[in-house]
Amino acid sequence: MQLKKQQRGMTFVGLVITAIVIVFAGMVVIQAVPTYIEFVTVKKAVDRAATGTTVAEIRGTFDKAATIDNITAITGRDLEIGKVAGNVVVSFAYEKDIHLFGPAYLVMRYQGESK
Image (cartoon, rainbow, N blue to C red; front, side, top):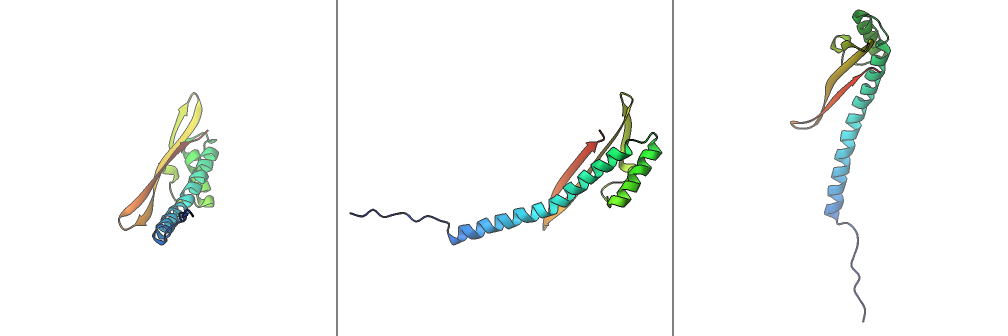
């Protein structure tokens, strides 16, 4: 008496659906990674600019770094500059929209402050 073995694996429909999900996720990641890289660049520029002593100097230093590093998300005017315990603190916040398809967008919100 032989026992029948069940087949294992994925159906063609399951393979197609899995491929669509992987391609969609890959497209989102490919579009989101540059916005994160820009955020890291903005953070570094803000840290460099926070060494300034006046508001105009801080904004000017950031704008120079933004020109060199091709930062388009924010400008020196978008920075919030204040003092905490005698130290200059520069903070920022901005959004990046990633078009997915049709009317659907992925909104990435970034915020940070100098060390």
